[in-house]
Amino acid sequence: MDKESQNRLEHFAALKSKYQATQYEDSLPASLLYLILRKLDLGIELLDLESNWLGESQLEETLEAIKQEQQYRLQEFGNLEFEFSKLKSKYKATKHNGSWRSSHLYFILLKLESGNLLTDLEVQWLRATGLYETNQIAQEVKRFTQLKSQYKATQYQDSYPDSFLYQILKKLEVTERLSDSEYNWLINNELFETAEIFQQQESVKETHFAQLRDKYQANKHLDLSLSSPLYPILQNIDTKDNLSESEINWLEQQGLNETIIIAQELEQTREFAILRYKYKVTHHEDLLPKSHLYKVLKRLDSSNQLGEQDINFLKKRKLTETIEIANEKYASTLKSKIDSGELINESEIDWLEKNGREDIIIVAQQKHFAALKSKYDVLGYQDKSHTSFLYTILQKLELKERLEPTDFAWLQETKIKAPQPTYSYYTWQKQPKYQEKNLVSGKIWIAYHTIEANFYEQEFQRTDNKWNLANASSHWRKADKPEQALQLTNNLEFDKIKENKLKSALLTSRGGAFRDIGKLDEAENCARKAIEYQPKSHHPYTLMGAICFERHQYSDGEYWFQEAIKRGANPRDMDSEIKRVVKNAKDENKRREVIEYLLKKDSQRYAWAKSYLKKSSDNRK
Image (cartoon, rainbow, N blue to C red; front, side, top):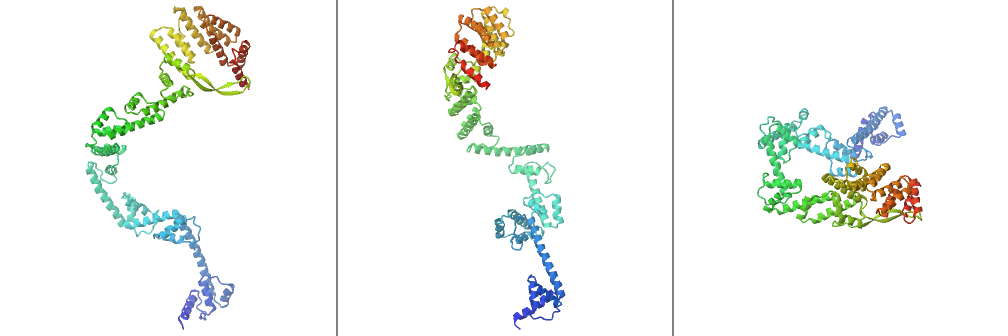
C-alpha cells in the first residue's frame, strides 16, 4: 500500500473516532462516510441527502456528535465576536467596523492584551486606519512593559496602562516618593525586587537630604524624614529656584534664618549675573551682590530711569553700553506713555532735551496739540504743527492762565471752517455748508471767560475793590454760569457803596444774570435801579430793551433800545440782543411772533431771522 493510501486510511479512522462512527465497518477511503466526515471537519454544512444517508446507516451517534460539533462552532464564533468587541472597547477602537475574521485589529489587540510589543508595521497600520487612541494606548503599554523590565516587575501579568503598578513605576522613574499604601501593594503582590529599588532610591535621597542640610546650615531642624517640608525647599535652593514667600515664612517659623540668608545671597548672585548680561556689563571686577553696581542695575531694571549719581557711577567705570541701554529704555517708556495718551512732565521733557531726543518731544507736543484741539472743539484749525500759536494759547487755557490781549486778538482774527447746516429761505431745503467762525467761540470762549472770572474774584479777595466783582460777574455770565454771577452779588450792601457808577455796573450785571435764568421781574428791578444810579449809561437801557423783547413787548423794547443808542450804544449790540431773544425762545409760537414782527419792521436789517423761521417750521413737521 502506498503512503497516500495509508494516510487516507489513518485519517478516516481518526474522523470515525472523532464523530463516534467506529462501528461502521467500511474503512475504505472511497466510502460515502469518509466524504461526509471530511466535509464536516472542514465546516461544510451537510446536504439533506447526506444527513438522510447517515440515518439510514444507523449512525445516530454520529448525527448527535455532528450536532454537538455544529453547536460548539456556533458558540465559538459568538465567543470570538464578543471577545473582539470587548477588546475594541478596552483599547478605544470601537469606530473600526471591520470583521474579526478578516481584520488585522483582532491580532494586534490580542498582542497588546498579552503584553507583547507591536512591530513598526503594526503601529503604522493603526495610524493609517485612524486608530490614534488605540496607538496611544499601545505606546503606554510599551512604556509600561519597559518600566516593568527596568524595575524588575515582569512577573506582573497586567500590562494595561490603568494598572496600579504602572502609576507606581512612573513614580519610581522620576524618583518620586511612594506612599505607604503603594509600597505595601508591591509587597502584597510579591514584587520584592521592585520594592527594593524603591528602598535604594530612598536611601540615596536620605543621603542627599543630609548633604543639603549641611550645605545650607539647616541641621538643627529635627525632622529628618523625606516627608519633611524642608527637603523640597532645600532642593529648590540647590536647583537655583527662588523661594516663594510661603517657603520663606516656613523657614522663619523653624528658626532657619541662616538657610534664608544663604538662599537670598544665591538668588541675588543669580539675579546680578542676569542683570550684568542684560545690561552689557562684561568687564566689571566686583561681581558680588553687595556691589554698588548691583543696586544700580536693579534700580535701572525696576524704574527704567537712572539718576545723575548712578549715571556718573557708570561713566567712571566706562560702562557706556549700559548707559546707552538705560537711556534707550527710558526713551521707550516715554514713547509708550505718549502713545497711551498721557502727558509728559517738565522733568521728562528736560531729560529728552539733554539726551537729544527732540523727536519724542515733537511727537508728544503734536499729540497734545491734537488732544487740545479736540477738547476745545477746534479740529477745523488745519495747522497741526506744535509750533502753532494756537497750541500756545490752548496750553495757557489748559493751565488756567490768563491770555494776553494779543492772544485774544489773534483768536478773534483767526477764522476756521466749521460744518454747519444753513437754510435756504427760497428752496426751504436744508443745505449743509462750511461756515467760517473765529476761534473766540464755543469752548475756548467758555474757558477764557471762566479764567477771567476767577482772576477778578481773586483780585476782589486781594484788594476788596468791588469793580473786580462787576468784572467777575460779567465774565461768569459770558462763561454761561449766571448762577455764579448772582452768587457774587447776593449779599452786597448797595447803600454802603459810594460810587453810583459802580452801583449801576453791579446792578446791570446782576440784572443780566437774572435775565439769563428767566427771572425777568428781578432783572427789571435791577435795571431800573441801575438807571437811577447812572441815567447816562447805556448799559441798563440795553438790558431793559432786551427784557421787553423777552416779554414780547416789542414797542417798549424798541423805546429802551433807542434810549440806549442815544447814550452811546452801538446799534449792532441791540441787534445781538434781539438775535439772542430769537435764538433762545422756547415757545415756537412766540419765536414766530417776534420774527414776523422783525421782518415786517425791516426785512433787510433782520434778514437773518428767516433761518429761525425755517427752523420753527421744520420742528413742527
